[in-house]
Length: 137
Image (cartoon, rainbow, N blue to C red):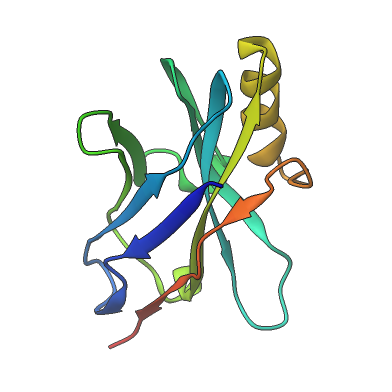
């Protein structure tokens, strides 16, 4: 059973930075997509960034490209989300999630669809508990 634990949330001023970390364990599938999502009160869930277990170019939601960077550390089994130039609209609960497959092509497709303007994330069957990010002066 995949377990995901997020950390690194908190309060930050507009223009500031935060680094979220997702500690992952229990993978059994051949390949995995690991994504960061967020959900603010009264808003739809957004897929922000996604990376596949074998590397390759990550996928990003257009509105966070250039500000957010996803990276993985295979030795530490962590997937981080570096967030820069934060805005009040970035205030939300942030989640990491994972989806497994026997096919790397399927994993890459899941990443692509998870970060679309209208995301598809029903394949992501493992979720962390979430971490609150608040951007406020």
